[in-house]
Image (cartoon, rainbow, N blue to C red; front, side, top):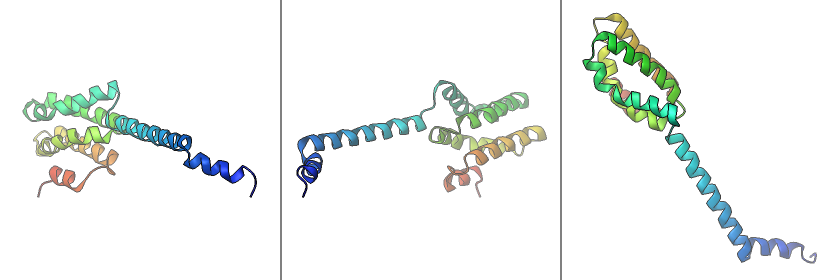
Amino acid sequence: GEPGGGEEAAAEGEGPEGQEEAAARREAEVREEEEEEERRNKPPMAPALALRVVQKVEMLLLCSPPSVAHVLLDALAAAIPLLQPWPRALLPALHKLWAPLVSLFDSPELALAAAAMGVLRTAAHLLRGELSVSSMAAAFPP
């Protein structure tokens, strides 16, 4: 063979320096994947505030007068698209809202029922790839 050609490549991959370099690369890749995972799970400040709204409206939807429920549904309709990039943060909060939203479908105030259906439609459309069978079963019990 050529002097130094193949030996240098072999030494680079097998020597202590090559192993340390490969380990450092792997560690950097793992760290980058963990940071990306955290970014996917944890929204920044403005979306985090929207998430708090989604998390807090469950009981208010059912026990508020229709005018307040309309405002809450408008807030949900605005928050869900904002939170679409963070489905792992949004879906647990939405899961708790399925039953209250579906119960509003029976509201004697048709505009309120339509607004609840609109929120559910928005969530289903934007998160269609993320919704599980169990989420849909919770939203529409038999």
